[in-house]
Length: 295
Ligand code: TA6
Image (tube, rainbow, N blue to C red; front, side, top):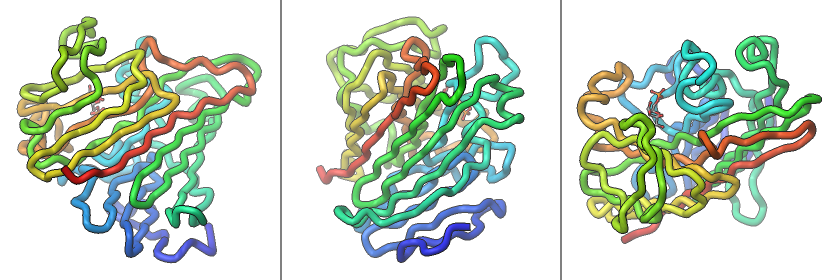
């Protein structure tokens, strides 16, 4: 158990009795569950909630939390070599270790650090030794940093994504800037490779795209909330854009039928052709910086 937590930071049990870290400070509030190291809330003072969490989210050790920022690792989507394996890997349904919580002297932000390492349980699913370290810097901006290390004697290849669900007022009225003219894989069309036009991404139907070889910053422009959500990433060559729209939302039991309109996933990761191969002893860090701007 960690002692001497920064002011406004405490550990208790939230929904489903799952252990969580609560950050309640004048300038920012946030909530992170040790289950999957899932950040479920982040709200700087004077700003509408930035992350979306389904009202139907299931808080159970066997289920990924529907919302916030689930961590997809060590694979994304379904596993080619094992279709029975859990979607998006096991990291988002494993208990991470809460390693530290400190206040960043320069910014005043709270930095939480959590870790996940290989175990006989993970080895049985994915036969590689690994160490994962997740740093979440919570202040007026949000910085997410996932570092994976290969402590073993053989290389391994993995996929990853910070599967962030962002809160919007009406997804049919937002646009995502930064992906213009970019190449993407369309999951809804057999992963056909397509190209974004010269216009920003708009959501007017179920949308499930992996923009590959793409390091661009993106911006979710929300004219109703009169804000934009800026996403700058480092160590990431894939951006995933997902909205289930009406039918898919209705088919998901942990997703309210009408909730598709109030969320949009823009995920930073390394997926498919952008997968990462780590030599013995090597590490790789994926970073995602989220900030809010008034329009
Ligand atoms: O990131 C988009 C996606 O891969 C979609 O295909 C959809 O399946 C979404 O992830 C949610 O996946 P989940 O396993 O959490 O229902």
